[in-house]
Length: 244
Ligand SMILES: O=C[C@H](O)COP(=O)(O)O
Image 1: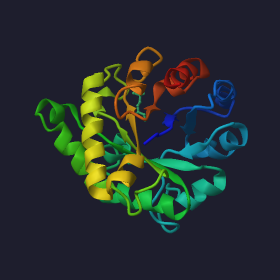
Image 2: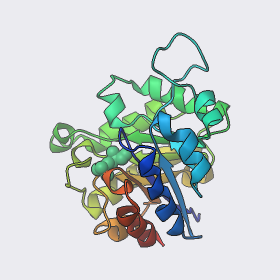
Image 3: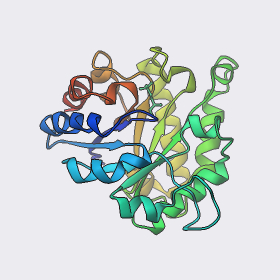
Image 4: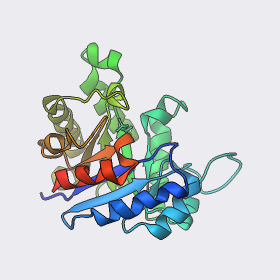
């Protein structure tokens, strides 16, 4: 099955109105063969969506549509602001905000309910990898956080080893291929051959212009989720080009 590559950025708690000028440079670097998207802080969704020539997303949404959840935004709110998708289950939320697999699943289902796309993150800690448990941990996360209706191109899964995020330490191509193969096998088991083959698998963790080509063309890698290097067009444009 042919899957289009997706190079997605995650600005995390970075960016400003003035910084949205970077979106113009990124727009100038678009390639018809590659899907590009960027998740921005909630305060920037509306102006970013008005300005960007590609989909803008949220970095997280609540699983409920409305209610007493101070500080949160719902999928419907993100959509109204202009978001086409959201990241869910980023490790900075799983670990920093104590989010469970069940929470992540519910958030992805909220996105589907509102006709939005989801990038669902999974990944192991350094201790888990060194204990030889990385594949077991990650495939268990996939099983427990996979939303209802997962079959379809609205969902992408991002494998982000926590020890590689923002550290400059990247997983080897061999490790990424092995993990993506295990995730793919889990999806095929849970969803069936064709739907399981349709879900895009992204790698995230210190992706830069220097390592993007090797990672983006590795077996079963359908794209990247890029943090730090998505903040400027100068750093992000070469990653888009590397995917082509
Ligand atoms: O969501 C993006 C990832 O956490 C990767 O971040 P990074 O590219 O800064 O390592």
